[in-house]
Each structure stands twice: as structure tokens, then as C-alpha cells.
Image (cartoon, rainbow, N blue to C red; front, side):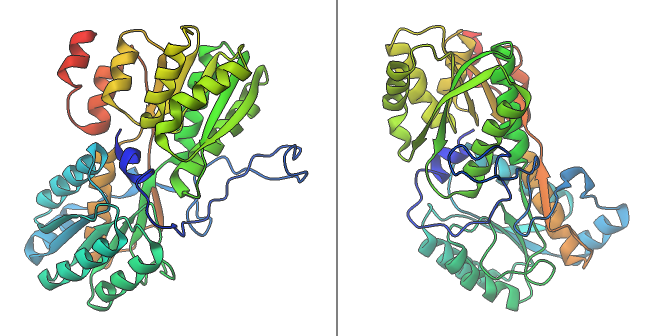
Length: 367
């Protein structure tokens, strides 16, 4: 999906992000040190994840919410297919609970605008605020005003600096990042029947979401596919460099059979680079859904597999967390939604399951 297209490469500030408990258990070939890898997504303080399915409301809860005339604001960091699906899920759930959405904003990946959005929205007196903070420092300053006014804060992925669960925020909801990496590794390994040369492109920036996903791909390949040889790992900072990096990989490692790209925008360039080299035998694997990659997938091109999350479900879960919080009911600190595998055989159903909208008409026609 398109969330990373806007989230990852549009960052204009240095994100002080949630630390992840992710490192691969190996003999320290690069660092010379033995490291440990926790095979699950962990929260900002190392919390084990709660499932989105555990976030439920009773009939009595719903009746209280409908009688309470509560208001909510959805203050997003950017605009994309992914954020639109999150918003749609949250709005649908709030409507079912009788909670009025009084504001939906787009900070355009600008922390200053996000701070203004938060401060402006406070005039509408929302009881619940859903947001993904761009800069945890400035975001914390702005959200502190909301906390002081009694608003319940539900966060997507990132933790504002100094915020304490149960006191300052109801909880964090995010993708199951390890499962996304694991599913991608499985698609790569299974496509090669457990044996072959693979190149990994990783996001060369300190960003919680992509860092965990990239490390999980490598860790699972090494743990579960001993016949897979990772011939190179190439960092990428500019998503437009996907074709250049793919070309370099093919030149240096002509026997490579699969290339992993961190998200769909980069994967588009990788597919282009592989195609330009005339290498129909190289499979490309990525995370998140994009129409161009979907088209290449259904046409039998180099794109062989994608892994997606469930942003509509994530939005529903965020709304439920906020609703429980205004009722002063306990909510877990860290909640995850699952990942799904997408290939040529299931893209029609999986696309709709992820984004809650049909596969683009031109892609469906190409099927």
C-alpha cells in the first residue's frame, strides 16, 4: 500500500523513534559481537503485543458511548491510500459507537503543521485524538496540551517523547512488523524452494517501521532457509534509486535469483532495473501494495510477491481503543494488526481485504 511512499521518503526531520528490540542472532560477522533477535514485534518499552482481536466493546459500553455525545479527531501525518483506509476504518467504527468525528487533518509530513493541526483542533474540544506523530519531540509538546485538557490519545506506531502509557496515552496500534518481514521471507524462500542467492535492499535510515521489517526478513531467511545465501545487502535512502541499485546488484552478483525491496515505490524501480537487464528469472518481493507492482504481478513480470497490512482494521482498532479510554477502561500499551501475503493467485481478494476497496479496474482487466 502507499503509506510508506509518503511516510518514508518524505521525512524532513530526524525522527526520534521508538527503539526496537530487533537484532539477528548470529556470530557477529559484521560487528564481531553476539546479538539476540526477538522473533516478534515489540512495543516502545519492549512490551509484547496484544492482538487487535482483544480490543472489544460490550453492548453496555456502546450504549454509554452513544449517550455520551463524545467527539473525536483524526489527525494524520500524511495523505495516501493507507491513511485513507485508516481514516475510513476509524470513521466507520466511531459512527457505530455514536461518536462524532469533528476533524480530519493531513500534516503533509510537516511537524510544524502537525503541531498547528493539534492546537487548532483543541478548540473543537475532542474527547479522543488519533494521530501518528512525525517528530516525537514537537509532537509531545503539542499533544501535552490535549492531555492537559482531558483528551484521550491513541497513537499509530510512534511514541511521543516522555509519554507514559495509561497516563498520557491509551495505547499504540501498529502493524505486526515482524510478521510482515517473516511473511516476505517465506515468500522468497518458498519461491526458490529453499535454495538460491538473494539480495536484500534495506532502508538506510533510522525509522522504526522499516528497520524492524527489514531486519525480520533477514533474520527469518537465515533461521528458516539454510539453503538461501544472502549475497549482498544494499542500503537505500532515496526511493528513486531502486533501479540503480538493482542494476548494480545484477552486475556484481549475476547469479542472484531474488531481490527484496523495503516498500512498493522502491520495488517499482527494482522491477524496472531487473527488466532492463533482461533478467526474467529474478523475482522481486516487497511490502505494501501499489498499482504498478500489482500490474506487473498479474502480468507475470518480475514482481512475485507482496506483503500487506490491514489499515482499515487498524483504524477500527484505534477507534475502539479511544472509546474504551473515554469510558476509563484499561487498554493495552501496544496492539498489532496482522499481515497478509499477496501473490498472483489471490491479489483480487487480498487487495480489498487490506485497503477495503476493490482492485483497480485496469489491474483486474489484466488478470
